[in-house]
Structure formats: C-alpha cells, structure tokens
Amino acid sequence: MRYVSQLFQPVITIPKGAKIKNTEITCKSQKLLLECGLVRPTSAGFFALLPLARRALDKLEALVIDCLEAAGAQRLSLPCLTSAKLWEASGRLADVGTELLKVEDRHGKKFLLAPTHEEAIADLLADVGPLSYKQLPLILYQITSKYRDEFRPKHGLLRSREFSMLDAYSVHRNAECANIVYGNVSNAYRDLFGKLELNVHRVKAPSGDMGGELSHEWQLPVSAGEDTIAICPSCSHAVLSEEKSVCEQCGKEMAGCNSVEVGHTFILGTKYSDPLKASFVPPEGPPTPLIMSCYGIGITRLLAASLEALSTEKALRWPRAIAPYSVIVIGPKEGSKEWSNAGKERADEISHQLSSVVGGDLLVDDRHPLTIGKRLMMADRMGYPSVVVCGRAATENPPRFELYRSGADAPVLLTADELIRTVRTDCSDDKRNKAVI
Ligand SMILES: [Zn+2]
Image (tube, rainbow, N blue to C red; front, top):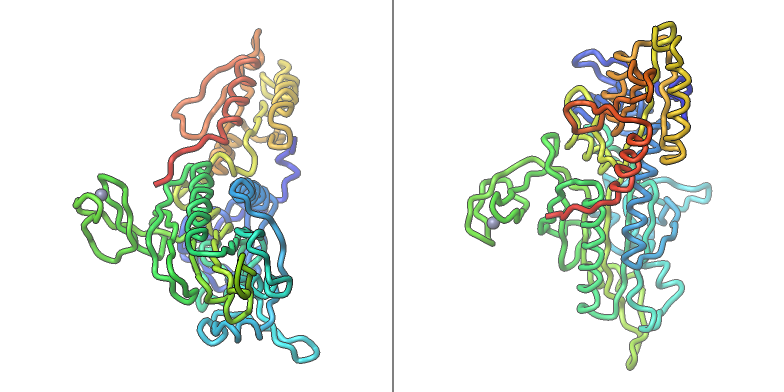
C-alpha cells in the first residue's frame, strides 16, 4: 500500500500554447502525462519517466514478456551500442544514417545507439554458429532502450528519441517454418492487444529500410496519429491508405482515420544473415544462411497511444491492466463529522482489507486536509480504475463504501465484503481477452 502524500508526482499546469524544453504540446497524452506529473522532459525528445509512469510501463512490459514467452521466445539483452561496422556490412549505415545517434570510443572505434538489432542478432548467431537445424526455429527477444535521432520529436512519448522497445528475432531453416512462427508471434501480439482492450489493426506494409519479404504494421486508431489507415465498417479489414478505398474482402467502402504504428512484424529472409554470415547446418549439405524474421513493439509509444485512444482532454484513462495503481482509497476530510465518527478508522480498515487482495497495487489518498470531492476529482483525472470513497455511509452500521469504477456512470454503495469481492473480480478480469481485428 502506498500513500499519495509520499508520491513523487510533480503536478504542473501548462499554459495554453506554451513550449516545454523547446517542444510544443500537441496531443492530449503528452499534456496529461506532463501535467499529472508522470513524465518530465529532459531535452527535446528525451523524458524522465517518473514513478507512476514507470509503474505503468513495468506492467506493460510484464504483459509483453508473458505473451512472448508463451509464444516460445527466450529473453536476452544486447548492448545498446552496436558496432557501426555491422551496419556497414548490412548496408543500413548509409540508408538510415541521419536517424542514427553515433558515438566513438577513445580508440576511435565507431558505434551507434541502436534503434533496432537485426545486425547485432545476426552477428551473435554467426559468432556462436553455425547452428544445427535441430536448434531451429529459435525465437529471441529483448526489451531495452532504443534510440532514434528524430529530426523533430513531437507528441511526447509517441515520437521520442529514446524509447523502450520490444524487439524479437526468429531464425528458421526454411520459409515454411518462418511463416508458422510469424503466425505464432502475430497471435502473441493479438493476445497482448486483447489484454490491453485496444482495437489494434494489422495492416500489410511495405518493408522499407528493413528489407525483406513480408511485413505488417500494427496500427492503433488515434486522432494524433501520423499514419492513416482505412478500416472496413463491415468486416474490419484494414489497410494502410491515404485515400478512401474499397474493401478487398467484401467490397464495402472503407473509412479512413489517423493512427499510430505500435508494432511491426517482418519476414526478412536472408537480408541480414547472408552478409553477416549467420548460418545453420542442414541435415545434408553445407552451412546455409538462416531465414530471419523480426518483430517490434514500441512499448513507451504503445503506452502513450493507449492513453491517446482512451483518455479525454481532461482525464487520463488507462487500459485497466496497466494503470499505475488499480485501486485508490479516499477517506474523510480531517475535522469533518465523518472523521470524528470513526471514519478515519473505517478507511484504514478497508485499506488493509483491500491491500490483502491487490497488494502493492493499492494507493491510499492520505491528504486528509483536502475534501473528499477534491481528492475524488484528482483520482478521476489520474484514471485509477477503482476509486473507493469512505464517506458518511462508511460510519454507519454496517459500514458501506462508495465504489467508482472507470467507465461506469454512477458509484455503487457496497459493504466491505461486497467491495472486496468486486475488486477481486475486477483484478482477475484484467487478464481477460478481447479479440483483436
Ligand atoms: Zn470488408
């Protein structure tokens, strides 16, 4: 259980049109995260993630890990710095050059702060290889900070220069196996977005700088998005599109909307394994380049995009599974009739009971000099999924508590037992799945 009075949460008010660290405030997730004290820019495109945002990101990363591990992927960590030589070998140093943050060590050796690790993985597999065909398919992933020197970072965490990213890589003996694993990882993505209750659309995409044979973008419709997709109102088929188009599945006219790319999946073939000499030994014949795929999810971007999709202009709304805290308890105002009528004790009791259900996911608003109404307003702005208020009814016999649930219009009045049961159900529902289109 954590107390609001102890939170490191520097709340600010941003005047209209103000710039923060030379950056314009252009979307609601950026504004709300700054104003509610969840992030703090350090310079253009770089952010300190403060404790509440860090908690949400930890929960999101844990969900990503669950989904990837269930698909058979194994976690590793590669250095953030990749030798520029590897990017020269793949031909990408020239292709992506201006977006790379480059550094040089004291011996003049050149590195880059990697935005992605295809070269590093291929080099690692070449270094330990050749693999045996019996070791395939192999899926490896990491969640680390990635870097991209955006010309103009904007929209806060939607387009920053440092970000947390999942990058996964699979290697295969043939195209058939690559396709099967591609399908499995795509299903892991669907599980993840389902757990987040986000309508993420998978759309066919050009492979771009990454190269390769097949690729999809995973797009979440939000008005601040810089991409455009068209969605069929009838069958939900979606495509990347600037203009109105007709659904190739059912012939209906599709509706366009802005969206954010939250994930990407590629079958790369041998674009990296060939020049970097990552190979395997087949049952017969000489070592052969591995067929490689890669999969990415911008985790900080996904966090911001989900807030962008769910929040109002005035209040944060989280996918329940990643709210910084699931439950907050608000006790009576100091000196009020309820306070002197054992209201404070009732609030303490119910907090302890709730903490046995949700553990460290419970927040107690102990700023007792503030009215219940004021604290309720602040809890609503923060978007905590369950807000428990100990008002007058909590001092009656039996005590009853108001429960405000995110998404519900009016609070419900519950006894302690009913409240505990409801919160327990809500928390176990966090793992519920919703089909993703
Ligand atoms: Zn259709």
